[in-house]
Image (tube, rainbow, N blue to C red; front, side, top):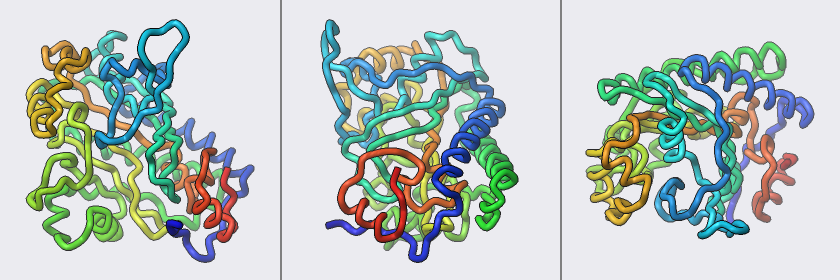
Length: 337
């Protein structure tokens, strides 16, 4: 049986009842702050899309979507992994303008996720996307947006601490963001695995944005997998924070400036996915029929874990768990929702 590591002597700062109140308050407050600082409007989004549409995000390219038939509808529906492509299509359909964007409370199922204290088969996140100009497709604008998101998280945490003073024992989120590329991180720690590199760096830089994920590094391997048809691998990244409860780093957001015609064609070729050129979404993008955008997903449960000092993601969301997680939680005195 796999080992699920949980911190020794852990005791939750909030009761289950208080936790539910804090999750609701934190989610509403952060969503308002995020929408204000990035000029986003909340929209309704699908739980599933047509499997043949090319709109589903295939993450690392190997995860299986949950597929099913719908009465009277030709072809299968697929539960979304994320809304990376759908959001861009929606911005065009809903007639948004440059500088404006949308966000939604996205729920998904990732059936192939390796279940542990940070990963669940159930996904809940704020998915957001906004239209940008050609001149904004640069690392400077990406970094500026990252800092705005971090500031919104900090302000949410500060308010929660006034309502629930028990949370004051947790360190405040650092708004001093360290920016580093995946290649620079590999150069710093060439003998470590990608996850070990993240832990080593983020421990000393508790709010880090790791840039340039998806393409091969000089070692011949990518830092992490990224589908070739949503983020521009040169203009994306993960927002990593130091988890003082678990003594580890974890990702709260994956985001980036999206592919344009040139970078999509290049990344489809590099990844051997040229067949996707024939999908409706990709045809539209390659022909210049979609707006230039940036966007990402911000994990709601991960944010709750960070701001409320939780050791297991099952303390802040209801999901299904395997025997290893159930036994580990029982031994640690943790109630899985």
